[in-house]
Structures are given as structure tokens and as C-alpha cells.
Length: 455
Ligand SMILES: C[S@@+](CC[C@H](N)C(=O)[O-])C[C@H]1O[C@@H](n2cnc3c(N)ncnc32)[C@H](O)[C@@H]1O
Picture 1 (cartoon, rainbow, N blue to C red):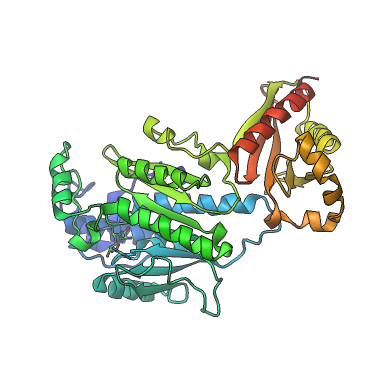
Picture 2 (cartoon, rainbow, N blue to C red; picture 1 turned 90 degrees about the horizontal axis):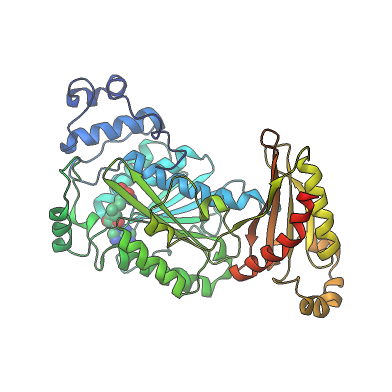
């Protein structure tokens, strides 16, 4: 589960839920559980959770897909992580409201827009579906929860471009999506769906009622997401302003994730992320996200330490965006003091070509160094020779306001533990398109920074 998922540490107390949501009471067994193979009972439990924990008022349809709350939350929390990763640095970027998301295939429950809006007050959604019942039911639940000014439901056709219903034109909206999300139909045919059911070796711990149009699409989830990748590339080629949109999707099979990541890599899209959500003993889901712009994700997302990923998923991770530049025993050293030494070394060696600043870390009394340059590889001799004159012509004010025009950006942090007296200097890659440039920058910095820690 996602680390911030509230159900990780606190599984639902069914008895308390039934007290707060009477409809659940009749499905309670032994006062403490429900029969998970009974679709009506699972719907009542889901409604109770949404009601109690998220103030969402909904009547789920027992013959339609019943969204498992913990599972849907994992995906929403991960998207929050992707967006928050941007707002850490690039202090000129304004991440205040509104944030716009597109939910492709919102279903009868409209679950992602509802959860997303309840968790973040500045989130807004366009929600689409090709199914009449999904569109009408979703629109009703949005209105029932008084979210008609933040969630807009549209009917689309299977052949319509996925990203056509963007908020442009709405007077109160931003022109571009900050993110798109989707829980696509998994299977390519009824035969494929039936085969997957027979293959299940575990007993049916939980029953999934669903209409065929919710579970089946030509080519299955792989074809669906491949189409999304193609359309996102086309969209970016026509409009560079879409560079910072996070395109994302859930995937129900690990094999699908492998195919999707391989397609991203084939198209040279290195700015992507993958996640694995493990739910109980039997359910695993994966998520993938990609974008075209240069803003890079924090290492906690590109290389998560927790939750521990399976070996197969580790092989699919994007290029690293973090590196330890130096680590050592540094008795009595203060982290800000070391950061100043690092800053003056960097200024001395690269100050002409890299804009360097010491900034305070959000919600902390600690500092970090932010650095960016118009181009990558500015530390090579050849670059310096060619660019010195050109760079001098750009005045300082312009340099300090140019994060959107940069080619390479990074942040440097120093962490000192009083208890262990160990000190670490860490670099995060914050901007750029070429992982090799980041690697080579790290290699070069290690030689310069290690002596500062040990001296
Ligand atoms: C697996 S369900 C997901 C429903 C909901 N988002 C959830 O997670 O519970 C997939 C949904 O995608 C819709 N769908 C299928 N093809 C679509 C398309 N081309 N555009 C938009 N929605 C589509 C289906 O009608 C269905 O409601």
C-alpha cells in the first residue's frame, strides 16, 4: 500500500462502520466481518468507508464495478506525490489552485474525482466515459456530493481522442491538465477475462461484479495505454505547453507494465515513474506515469525504498534522480556549515555557468543548494570556452528567473546526524533530459565534495 494510505496501519473496524452506516449492519457476520463474495455486502462496506472516512455520499450499483477504497486511494496518493515533487523546488512555479486532472473511464462511481477532490481542495476534474450509465450515474453522484463546480462529467465515444476534453475554454479553468489518470478495462475479450478467472489458484476471497464494458476493451489494457502514449506524444508535438502534464494509468498485470515501460523507453521518454501497490495477500496493481518536460521527480519516487518493490518492477524503474556525493564520519560538523563550504566550492568552480542559490527547505530550518544552467554538461572545458561570452551577456536577473528555460538543474542537501556523527551530502536531479549528464555531473562532484566532509 502507499505509505500515506490510512488503511495501512488502521484496517477498518467493521462494527464501528456498521454503527455509523446502518445499511452495512445486515451484512455483518460474527459482528466483525462481511462475506466478501456477496456483491451487495461489498458495496455496502465501500459506501460505509466512503461515507465515514471521506464524507462521500454514494449508492453503488451491485452489478457494476465496486471500487475498493484502499486500492483507489493508493493511486490518488501517488499522483499527489508526482505533483508535490514539482512544487518542492523551482520556487518560481506557482502551485496554488486550481489543479486540473482528467479521469478517463470514470465509471458509475466516479471514484477518483470524488476522492481526489475530498483529499485536496484545489483539485478539479474532467471525468469521461463511453458508457451511458456510467456518465449519468457519475453526474448524479457529483451533484449529490455538491461538487458540480469541480467535477465535470462528459460522455465520449471509443474513437474519440482521450485528451480532447481538456478544460480549455472554461472561463475558470487552467488550459492544461496537470495530470491524467485511468483505470482501463483489463481484458481484451470475454475469453481472455474468463481464462483469467479460471487461472486464479487462490480461492475467491473477494468477488468482483462488473459489466463487460468495464472489464473488456479491444487489445486489453496494453492497447489502451499504448494508445494513450501515442496520443500524448502527438499532443506534445503539437503543443509544447503540455510538457508538464503527468500522463498516468493503473495496470492490472505486471506483463502489461513491462510492455508499457518498454514502449516509453523506445520513444526516448526517460521521465517516467512506476509504482507497485500490494493489497493484502492476493492483489497487486501497478501504476505508470510519464511526461515530456524536464522537471524530474524526487528520488523517493523514482527509486522508492519503501514499500519494497518486487525484483521484476525494480528492473523497470526510470533513471535515478538522486546520488550520495559523500558520506562519512564528521564529528561536530554542522550541516549548514558544510552546505556553505559546498556552495563556495561550487561557486568557485562553476559560478560563471551555473546559477547557484542557498534556499530554505520547506517547513524546516534547514537549507539546500539549488543550481541550474541553460544547458547540460556546463562543467566540460569545451563548453566553458564556447559559452563564456554568451553567458556573460545574460544579466543576473534573467538568469535567476529562467527555470523554464534551463537545460540542467539540481539540488544539494547535507544531512548530519548528531547521534551517529555521520554526514551525508546528497544531490537530486531536478531538471534535464539526459540521465548521462546527471551521472557525469555526480561523478565530477564526488571528487570535489568528499574532501570537504573528511577535512
Ligand atoms: C475498469 S473501469 C474503471 C472505472 C473506475 N474508474 C474505477 O476505477 O472503478 C473502466 C471504465 O472505462 C470506460 N471506458 C472504456 N473505454 C473507454 C474510452 N475509450 N474512453 C473513456 N472511457 C472508457 C468503461 O466504460 C469503464 O467505465
